[in-house]
Length: 370
Image (tube, rainbow, N blue to C red; front, side, top):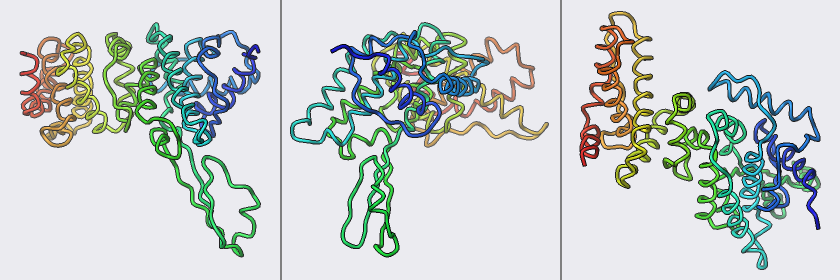
């Protein structure tokens, strides 16, 4: 039986992609599957052009926080596939799969998703990476809210659905109590689902690697843990890509971002992935130099400026990232610092100096020499 691709696109866009961008309730339905996802193409007309217009305006607002973008095209072939696979990944945690004859279905769904994601190429340009990010930047805001309803004669829990109105009737007389229990995306495998948590995390990692700006911008997430991938390193290897990433990281809590970047960068040394190091260290240096420049500019003239914070204890991953950035920033000032005045160079070096003298900086120097 032929699949109605137009109906699949319409359902996926209205019930999942649009609310993922605009906010609201995402409603994953019947799994789409890899074969169907690979047939979704950008020439599918929007059944609701007004909704598409609202979504594209929202995407432009997201992009303009990072770059001067005026418009976006409808979903590309890769973006349709990524959206379809995210839909199926979320649907794999549906409590309805928790039955004797269906318990293997969620993990089969994830297996198909991984095979399908392997067919999606990395972004072809920095603009392509930004476009994908506008669709998936809120991925970790996906949450299922369960409702536990208690009344004078019993209780019942509704997983991801609202209780029927009849159970809410006469709340004072029947002593009805309603408790809402949110489950963020990474907690869904442990909240009544039959899906394997490790496989769920691995599949999400594969999806994030296909939208590298989202991957790096959300590096402070609780899981899956961030690691430098080919696509992420390719993105920051270009001047424009690195600028986007620095701006995106600046919108997150600094200490958590530093910790995630430090942990991932340390792993590059221990795994001897030296080909990745130059662009990664350049990124860390640019972040620290930007922070030092902003602090110097905001200080009162003639006032003593406090050095940059370590980011936790001296041995933490955050301090490792910041120390690495300070060392690279110092080298930049020494070799290409003509854009700064002599007073600015002295001020910046004073801000960066304590971090560049930490044990973490010494550890980095030893790793570089190995």
